[in-house]
Image 1: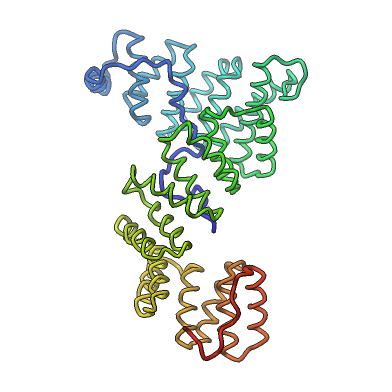
Image 2: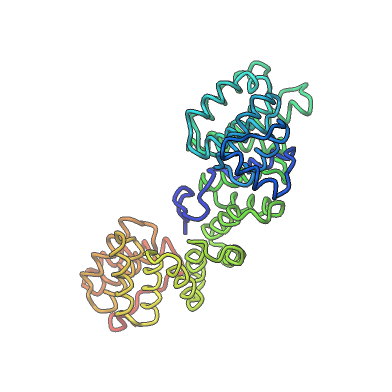
Length: 422
């Protein structure tokens, strides 16, 4: 029971890693909302505030409201040059360029700021976080290599003796950051080792935004038990973070903590009732819990939001099969395959319908496709054993029955031949 990879999950598409850059902008002073609207209009027309401090504050505020804002970007560009020590302004401008996919401007900004980045480990960390957040792995790696050279020259690792508390923290954060880069690069074992190294030095802090990044790393690495535990802790400090709760629910679902997953999905839907995919996964969890009426409602809700949800159609087909309505089941499955290539679950449902109808050769064809695509599917092996037994191939039936029992010790014995489909 595994969710889609994060890159394939439609809900809450956004930063690859979950830290919020805005958490670093606490020094920005908000302007009154009325002033913001008027100033935004003037800035859009090329008129900048005459007071540099006011321009800086307005740029940060507009950026907070919308990282894609061009007026914010213009203000931040001016402020970045007038206030070279304001790292929060540089970070906001960098993120604004990246959010608008202006790689040339982002690269030029990094070139201009490189001396400042090289002189401050804190600023270097935050620049790399920003690059990773926006999926800019090559740029993040380039900045990491420069930072790593400086750290290596100072022999600063989390276990180096004689380091101050601040130096130890920087070394631990560097290990953590290196772990994020390894995660983004797909180097699982290296990433886990680096993240463990940072954890031994109590990094990240439980109430820090980096806990969200750590949870996302575990999710991306498909370490769903670790992801669930980390999201659970992070959400005690960031309870309104909807993407984190979504991935927490998916992590619970993928580790068969189904009741807990349903509870998280329900929390999401109370705040985001039109968010796609959540109803589907909640329905899938309820289906596994054999709460079929509730599951059906979820799939119908998902279809109302996404009429092309072929997975919902497949699930509704299975529910119709379980209710004994093979005609309705086949109708739902046919609608699903009209939208997308048959999934293993769709072929499984077709195979079960064929078995119940006594069409054993057709069942063997459908179910063989399932075990080719999903060799760990115990139910497919069991249904295939039924089809082979009833078509007279006892050795094949025993082969798949044995495999089914290996995969699922609770699978029942084969029913007698005269109980076909009952």
